[in-house]
View 1 (cartoon, one colour):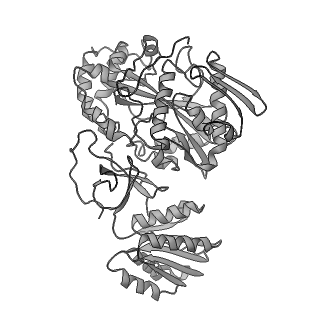
View 2 (view 1 turned 45 degrees about the vertical axis):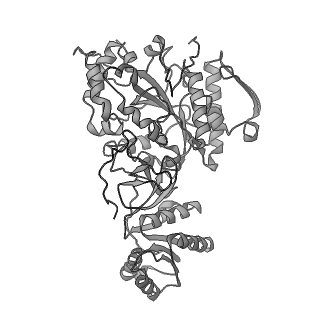
View 3 (view 1 turned 135 degrees about the vertical axis):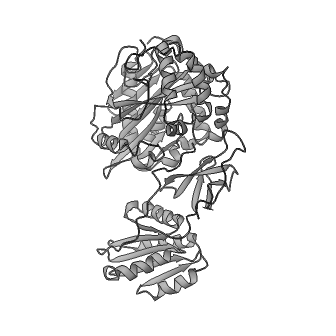
Amino acid sequence: MNQEFKKTTFRDDFTFFNSPASIKRFPFPFWEDKYMYSVNIEPHTAGAPGSVFEFPIDINEHYVSEMADRAIVLKEDPLRCQALPHMMLAQWDFLELLMTSMARDYPQWFSLTTQGDHWHWVNKPLGIDQKFVFGDPSTLPYEPMEYMGRQCQGDFSIQDQRDGQLWMDAGVITTQADWSLDFDVGMNFMEWHGPVPLAHDMKVFDRALKFLLNLQLGEPVRRLNWTMTINPRLDTSPENYNKWGKDRTTVTPENVGDKVHLRVELQALWRLPRSNAILFSIRGYLIKMRELVTVPKWGRRMHRVLGTLPPELIDYKGITRYRDTTLEWLSQYDDGAPTSPGGGPD
Amino acid sequence: MLVEGIKSRPRYPGLTADKHANHHIFAADGEGAQAILDLFTNESDAIKGRVTVVYAQTTPGSEAYAAKLNALSVDIVHIMPTVETALNRLAGVLHAARMGARMYAAGTETLIGFTVQLAQQLGMDPGAVLTEHRGTAARRVQCVHCKGFTENVTTNIVPCAHCGEHLLVRDHYSKRLAAFQGVCADAEVRGELPEISEVFK
């Protein structure tokens, strides 16, 4: 993708928007006209050129703006980035994965040269030129996970694997859909998924855990998840819920198109080579309802998915207050015509 | 946000004697004493070796319980005035403990939570602590906003003891913090609170 980076905001005046090209590559998560949980994991292999799946790490037009937003969050609340002491090796694994992927796939923006443990990293869009010694945290301005977390879109958590469980023992989480790293750090897979309704009874997490414990090096996997957000706000953390929660009451029939956003998470999981930990990346994509309906199939399907969502999920995803207004607005884009299978535009 | 019935809520299966242990270390508060007394009644043959009890006298009936605990065949009962002092004593006991020791915790969720937390800090598997819930269901709650802890919460909604936000007490529980999560209950419309009731008696 040859593009310029936008300078937009995800707070205060909310100037975020998607270019037509960005809308076209949006990872629309619904492959049929209704939604229910499933494990829906597939190999994280290269997708079509230009798509969000083209490269393992997707850098797009919002890169610089998203990194600026992350810097604000970390300045205001350092607890959004935490790593338990035994996770240092996994932090270096993480740094290596991101630097090598980004330099390989986006050579116009990033470069990495290594001579033994002496590494030289250049990040042109953020104006960073850093020489450091791989394995020596004192040669970086932050610990390795925070250092690269500040330079890559998406939230990241790192899971230690022991006793047949995964333990969320590190993470840099600033754009989360309403869960707290500070509260969940140190929890195992079942514990941190505790609040998710319905899925436990469906044994979704038992199966997913079993699968992940056997995740192989070099064979990352991915899935899509979604929620809805009022205003293009990245920091929808529980920590700040008492500040942003009121946004949910501001939706009117006139502003649905601009205020209501579908928020899709491209979640990928990688086995890390030295630590045997698992990296979980949660890459968020926002799209306004007004932008979404420019793809007729998505407008129809969004209306149908939202109209048939189980009550538990409406509650869990925090959609309750504005669902009806949004549904009514979307109905003008649903002529009842059949939709084609799969998430892509027709 | 207002989801209930969360699965991360800990379960307390009840005390059973570890017949392989050579040192049994009990932490209890209030009504938790009765769980220890019951264990000694039902499984006394399985309790071999040394027995150390650390007991916090936190309820009106605690003195009578302390006397009953002292009447058991135990090496020592540390009678402490509060959960906090009991935990300090327990930490001292654990630092001196050797291989073959087994921990038990009985009483309020707060006492159990702190005991498990202590075990974890000392490098033990939290699952290795045998637990039984007795007495009040009052909760220790962490405010997700200011991170302050509010103790002895018995209602579904509680004002944070630090920042004053009205917190909805969730079932989501952190062993590391030994606390339930509290999240602003009226963030969307200020003053619009669910009916407040005493649900953790």
